[in-house]
Image (cartoon, rainbow, N blue to C red; front, side, top):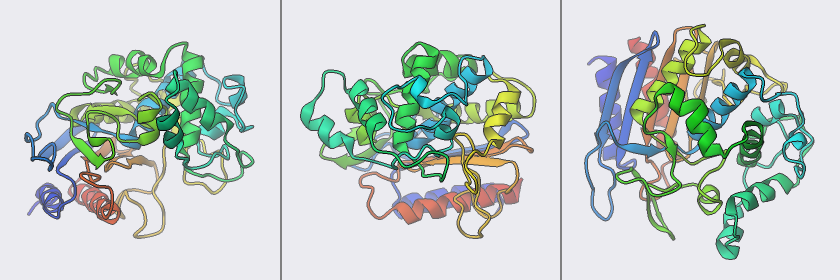
Length: 354
């Protein structure tokens, strides 16, 4: 069995376990895709729905952070429209944090990891839920900035507002104009309205969530936010990965600038943290990183998403592994360990093959 066949088997076995209803994998090497696989159906309940194809979109969850929010920041910094060392309060005056934009990107602004603002938003139904979500996140009490990295959705909600003000347009328009359009990503977008045929996520008190963002703060906070909300096909995630590794290697793609992109991958403003600017790096402790043990520890960055998504890049070799699943379908409970194991196994198999 080749390693690529092993990836097929790993994915099919995970779905049979069952781990969600759908999975898709892209492996890239030397800046081009060398393997792609789709498996499963868009849902399990109330029926299994249609089989996956090239046009099926996934809720990327927190992979929205690097693919949209961080990517927008890269473009704005490269074009001189955003200063990484400006205080957050320059853009969001009510922010509790005293951090810079750089510290915010590195999850070092002292912001709380997560607060269930959606419970208040769902009850109060404010006239402008997006602005209300940003204000709630911005005003939430913070620890001192620059001391430690705490992976924070709240920080990225605030970051989304920073980018809107730096770009002079709503976040969804900034993503379309600065990232998706120039890269030719045809499916990648925020789901302000339902997306037909999307992979389903959780069955919860909203009913079966399909084609609308799973993350509750984003959903009840206007469906567009800095921490979640982007949907895309596997092909568009792979296209984004190819653009990033090419740009990092010195061949600009879209509106990305190589020097800026590499600054995002190398700047480490929080001492001892694995976080760079919006991207994580693999742990050096064996058996810990969701990148797997075979993925390189130098020149590697990545990110995961709660719905069961992940994207890891090997910059020197212009490689990537994108894994998209709906592990939260029909429930998030009982699948966290399984998706971590699947990510590690798929990444290790890809590196063994390459």
